[in-house]
Length: 349
Picture 1 (tube, rainbow, N blue to C red):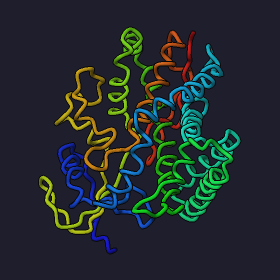
Picture 2 (cartoon, helix red, strand yellow):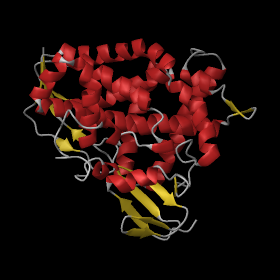
Picture 3 (cartoon, rainbow, N blue to C red):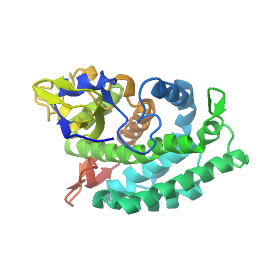
């Protein structure tokens, strides 16, 4: 596939137009298998229909007690009254343990995945493509090991992993290559964005004691507040699309086969749509927030992410009387990562 040029969509109106025109702005951008995010049309719909039941209300209700155990253990081990580095102590461990609990993976796998994540982050920042290819193979091996455990009945047969091995499409079992791609989207993608989101939420609360007080008094608004926080401080910075025909958006023209980068951060802080876009406001229209995308490719894991971030935030606000910035300076993450590389916070009982 010959790519003629590259472009960036940053205006909210243009991004929304592209998201609702999947026939013109294809998700088939990568040369690697990407199920179902990198698919279009009937193929995308078929595979998306396979995975959406994993994020149903019933499944998430059954998962919530397991998630609560993960949160309680992490918060009980926080060193209250002393500065805590949130990303290494809370955000990344939470993202990893929550995902392992959701997948039904053994605790023994945790350190292996921690090491893998660290190597993946370093290779991504360095754009070390040979290392990234090697790490992709390593991740595939980890996931296939878990599938084989499920097939040997060595894990909970009701687990998400075990259920994935039972999936079929048009009467044929879904190949392991496709199952690995599904899990890669859930795990590799979600670990980074959930960790970044936790850092941004805690960092915002630490710097905005008034909002903390408001949420403790009215916890029913926590989910709305999280979406507004992450609108301002995007955990996922960009995605890509590919034009399938010549296109006109606003004053810009795009040739066929143009790779288009969607700048989520810019679109979600577009002053033409959001008054004082960098300010937290309670009265934002939630339908304008593109935190989870929009259109047919809207994030399928949105209900799981909202459950994880909402429950963690509620528990933090319940357990600690105040959350405040520590004495150490914070460091922002470097693209393509959003949020913080490190941020020090003091949790007070």
